[in-house]
Image (cartoon, rainbow, N blue to C red; front, side):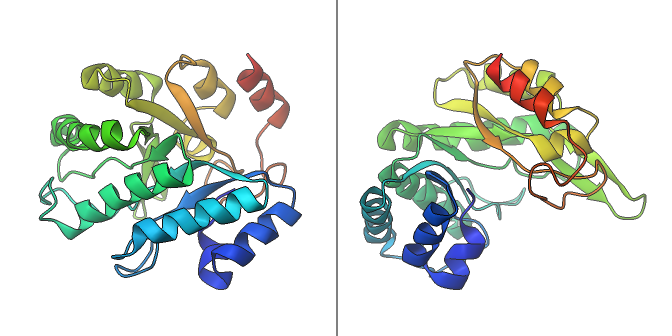
Length: 237
């Protein structure tokens, strides 16, 4: 269960208790939309991560994955001189401390489509040493851009082919794929088809929610338009 809203409203301890009481046994820890000095990413981020790990273990829960900040821009330096890059690296380390096996890191948007592949190849490669150091994989997610003028979604890394192409170019066990089933539906794929099109050796994380194929409104499963029997069958296969 994604943790951002509960964490910001109630703090880690109460959020974890609420998720446990709701029946969840693991969390997807959210590092996005946090202020620079938020405890999860500020100077004491390591102590904060250790405390979250303690609270999870105390309640019989785990952090199975996490989500890094996504404020990196095309012109940003890909090193620790850039505060946004520092936040991503801190999130990688903190997630590993919490016990996560994978952390989702969004690709960087580029001013022209032809710049996208090379820029993100450099970006992800720059993160590989931190993955190796902390023992956690970066999961690359299928994304979209909403065109407000035309009122539709444009896919970004939205096909199995594009995801595989990037993973193959990275050529490293430290990079895997996260399928967001809502994003798949918005960019022309049935969620179950997207799942079945990727090998289980690279598909290691999921974002599960529902929608009406038109808006990324993150509904609870079974409250939108998806066929969850098909999605669960695809995951089983």
